[in-house]
Image: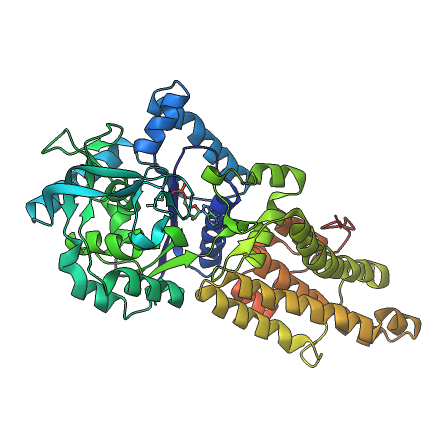
Length: 504
Ligand code: ME8
């Protein structure tokens, strides 16, 4: 079994501050990475910023700044957001980093030498805002890009081209595997591109200068996608400074997961594999292409001016509650929404009424009936004992498929079962009737299931996790999947009665 894990997010454009959509992808990557660590993997988590291109050059001009000063300011805000959202990345790559620039130039030279890149002319409909040549399907009213609704330009100039057309067979074979998820995205790529005439890709520009110059022909700058996609290996030291990290995390022993939003699927599932194959490098195991967060019926995006700032949400509620909403309420296979109403409803139902309530009523009863010291009794014959073990199994199974929402669902079901059990068994009646042995069993099994719930939610609720554990008298260093299954962690005296997840 592979025991290294490498996860990446797209590198985001610093053409403005980030919004909930970017927080979505990055939180998913963070949660999966934390889970993999819990499961014993050596992990590497990469995110960053995609700083070159015409759009950034124009934005900087609008702000009377040189491009680097302009992006420096915005990248500070990126990092501030990731800090507030408890995103535990290992590396933040900027495409203006010198090591990245050198690697991209070396990659370009290699492909040029192999005649996989050649000089030609290119003409097409081009969207500056998305840095993308448009296909017929992407054009609205002969004038606009259907996604961002901006006007495109007609664009003709000398350009170096990547020979994507040579890779039809390679791509057809690749698309017969499960490397791209979900399935409908795979069909879309096959129908729109691979099974059609597969065109070569324009990879340089001469009409702007804010980019990485081609060493062999410096009036050309390397256009955003070769520059941007290469970040995933330049960050690991490819052809550069840290070959050991590359050896560790781009080796066959590594499970490589790349999470993206669906609008950049073409670049990641077609051009990126072509570049890797051209360099004789392995491919990622999985490109997980998630749906969009919509605002009304449109994609939430800077260019449509309909964004929600995650920093506002964190300041108003909390980082954990945002991480929870993203992880649970926005499953990756479909588009989702983010509104105050949906957010509050989910928080109250799942965190306040289910998990928070269960922890607080159980710990209160342990304090009340047993002075906070849980008697150690055998609980294997308790009806809700086995559900705990089953939950661990189904949680892991869903997480291993990167289905975070489904994993959380199994944990929440365990919480519901425990709350239901309390209503049915009525521990307060056991106390009244002096059935203390049964009461000890009931509280013990509830306690065990609560520890399971807390541990399984720990990659998501990273700030509350310790508070929850403290409330049930368990030290964070005492639990892992093994001690959880054997119930072999130590339980201290319970004293804490703080209310977790107060209702909003
Ligand atoms: O595309 N819903 O950068 P970008 C869900 N630099 N996810 C969303 C979203 C939404 N409404 N809006 C943004 C770029 N995202 C390139 C990437 S990678 C080599 C280069 C997320 O700033 C989602 O992950 O436009 C999407 O793919 C990404 O942000 C686009 O960020």
